[in-house]
Image (cartoon, rainbow, N blue to C red; front, side, top):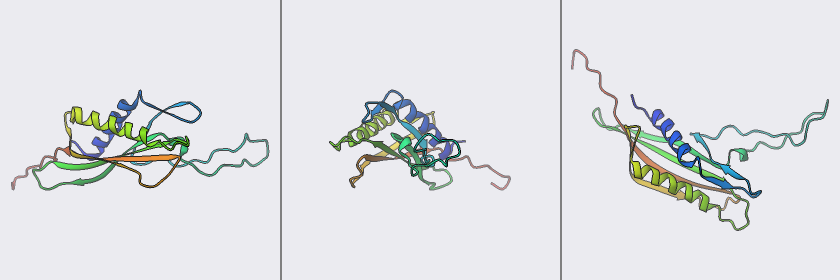
Length: 172
């Protein structure tokens, strides 16, 4: 049986595979691989400010999600079932986030590159796991607000998922 959840899990695998050799560089010159999460970022965590000393309460910095960057979220949006014999249309969006503290304020290029890689992968193959087909349109959106040093973008897609088979009863 196919479901939107199975589709989401498959898309997480595909995104991880597509981005396994792609990195974003941070300001310290360290290359970072993309984290891929289904639906939401993990919970924010507080990190210790300094090494704990014996019998001294440990101070913690405010909770932050910076350790999750760069990331791609694979998010279920809505599902449309139009009839008993119709396939389902499942809307899935991809949210891409990076941190780029360079003062040139051009982090959107990394976001665009990730969206381009994903859309090319989906449109080149079109059918995944012999059961999920991407449909048109594919829409890409960039943030409109200045959120420096965090850069965000999104891509919305619609997928065909086969309708569940109707169980026939003695009254059908």
